[in-house]
Image 1 (cartoon, rainbow, N blue to C red):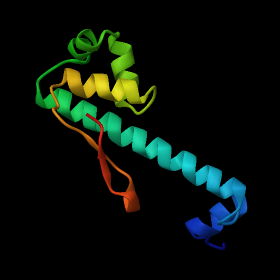
Image 2 (cartoon, rainbow, N blue to C red):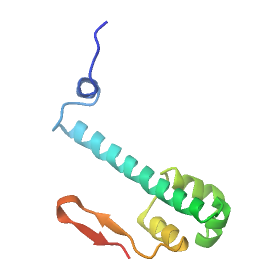
Image 3 (cartoon, rainbow, N blue to C red):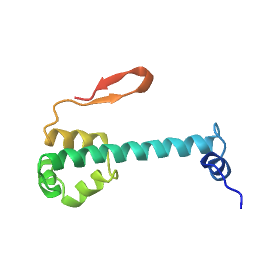
Image 4 (tube, rainbow, N blue to C red):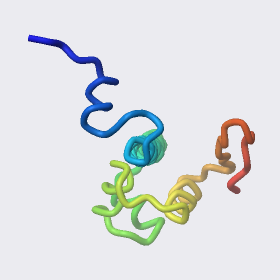
Length: 106
């Protein structure tokens, strides 16, 4: 039985590095990972403050189910991120733009 590296599998299934298919796949994957990490940051901050999903939802004006989606990395928009962190009392936030540096979100 031949073993394949992750790179070999991606090359065969998605496409080689530099192709439109591979670039699209990797961009989508990065966005999903970023959304998950943002949702996890919201969840951890909420829990540190001893809030339930329902309580955070009341502060933002959404149902508990929506907070669950946000914390799992689904249903995340810039406006949602701002509302959630502001409702949690996070005073400042910045976005890392890699080579371009960091920018303040609020």
